[in-house]
Each structure stands twice: as structure tokens, then as C-alpha cells.
Amino acid sequence: MAENPTVAAAGRPADERLQKQSGLRKLLSRPELGAIAGTVLVFLFFGATAHGTGMFAADGIMNWITVTAQLTIIATGAALLMVGGEFDLSVGSMIGFAGMMIAIPTVYFGWPVEISVVFAFCGALLIGFLNGLIVVRTRLPSFIVTLASLYILRGMTIALSILFANRTIVSGVKNFAGDSFVVPLFSGKAFPGLFVWMAEAGIIGTLPNGQPSVQGIPAVVIWAFVIALVGHIVLTRTRFGNWIFGAGGDANAARNVGVPVARVKITLFMVTAFCATVYATCQVMEFGSAAADRGVLKEFEAIIAAVIGGCLLTGGYGSVVGAFFGALIFGVVQMGILFTGAPNDWFQVFLGLMLLTAVLFNSYIRRRATGER
Image (cartoon, rainbow, N blue to C red):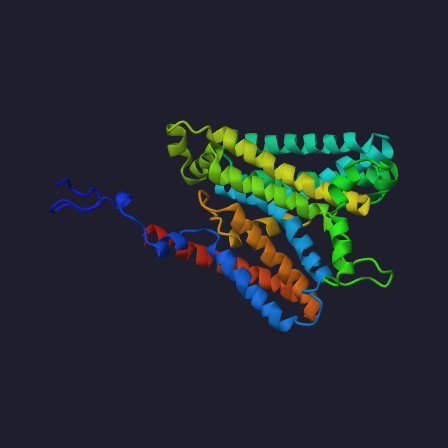
């Protein structure tokens, strides 16, 4: 009778790689477990404390979904980069800088807004490429390299806005954009007819003028869904996703088995720059202006969402799904505090506690799942 490969021979321990994992251990190994549990607790809390405040009415729901979507866009890029073992602290400054790269050429140089948007994306991707190149060539910590980029980009954003507009805001973008397709692409509303029908059917409320309380799904929500879905598929279903895990887990070992670690890391820095520019473009088209203070501290919010979602600070572990739930917690709490009338200062306290709790929880779960001490 052939020996079962999962059964140890006499005097020899069984190969743990061939042993079947229990359902509980598989569940504990999921990086997004803590974020999902946190999301349930947050909804239960605000379901009890914000009941009757309008937070869970159609317009209230759309408020925190929009906040969630904005953070999901940049948190997706941050999560992928953290799984790859790096950080990008320039994301927030990139949002402000990319906005200026759209507004200044459009308003002061007379460029078509479509060209300005392409220019902003190309410039952002170039900066992301340079960040990644410096990190892989010099082997300096990405924390230091992108911290320098944070200050450089923020300083350039302020300097350029004052140079052209003599203030820190450049407005009038929509006046020059006209009926360009770029405006609805980044700031339009999807499925307006559906929401009109829902209002007529009494499913959602209406405004005093008879219009539905929600006009449609904001474009930023669609962008967030697409970016998060693509990020999840790439990370979990492609060879490049395996490379990301390998580059973040053990870069030297990954190089030895043929993973192009340098190319992977540079690409991920470009992805975070791309996500920041999508965020910036949505804001410029929504408000019709670019401001030098846009994106302040957003890099930390993106990292917090990724960490709450299960990304380890050491790399090689995490998920885009978890980052989405981290962003959802952020959006629900931020708007929930407003609806309940609690002082907004408590939001910062909550974020700090959530970050610390997530790091401790993820570390504990990781040790339990891997058998580490």
C-alpha cells in the first residue's frame, strides 16, 4: 500500500507544505479579515447612534460612498506599493501638483483641457518613474525619497500658483473646458434616469424642486470601482501580481528566481502617481479649480486605509479588497461623526486608534496564520 504523502514516515515529521489547512486557518490568513470586522462594527455603531439623522438616507449614503471612493482611488495604489515593499509619501502633494498641471495650461496658456489632462498624467507618471528609479538605483528607503518628493512637489505647486494667479488657487477651468468630454468623464453623474425613476417610485427622497435627492452615481465612484477591481485582479490573478508579492516579501530571493524586482517597483510608483492624478482630475473638474493645498495629508490617509486593510509595513502581504474596506471605514466614520454632531476632532483620534489597532491585529493574525512566534 502506497504511503500517504501527508503522513510522516516513522520517525520523520510530516511535510507541513502538504498538510491541508483548516477553514479557520485559511480565514485567519486573509489580510482583509480585520478590515471587514472593523467595517461591521462601524456600521453597527453608527446604525445605533446615527439612526434618524439621515446618514442612511439616499443622499447620506451617497455622501460617505463618495468619500470612500475618493480614498479608495489612492488607497489602491498605496496598497499595491506596500505589498511590493515600498511607501509613497508624495501622493498628497502629487494631487495638488497634478491639479495645477491641468489648471495652469488650460487657463493661462489656452491649451484644450484634454491636452492639459494628458499633460498632467504624463508628468505624474514621469515623477513616479523617477521616484521608483531613485529608490531601486540608490537603494535608499522609499520613505526618504518620497518624503523629499512631497516637499518638492508641494513647494512647486505653491510657487507656480502664485506665479501665474498671484494666489494659491487657479479657478475658471470649467469656463475654458466648455462641453469637453473630459468634464463628464471625471465629474459627471452616471445613471441619472435610474434615480429619477427611484424618486418617482418613492424609493428615495426628492428635493423641494421635485428632483431626486441623488442625481446619479458620481464619476469618482465609477473610477474608484474600476481602479480597485483592476488592482485586485492584477494582484491576485496575474503573474505580475505574484511578482509584487515576491518583490515585497524577499527582493533578493525574488531576483534569484527571475522576478524583475526593479521594474516591478518602478511600475508601482507610477501606479500611485496615476491614482493620485485621477483623484486630482476628478476634483479639478468637479470644482472647476486647482488649489495648492489639495491633497494635504492624503498620503497618510491612503496608507492608513491600506494598513487597516491588512497590508504589512514590511511588505509582501496585503490586498486591494482590504484597502477598500479600510477606505470604507474612513468614509463612514468621517461622515458619521458629522451626522451625529460629535466634535470633528474625534475623527483624528479615531484614525490613530484604528491604525494602531489594525497594526497590532494584523501582526497577531499573521503570526497565528504562519505559526511564527
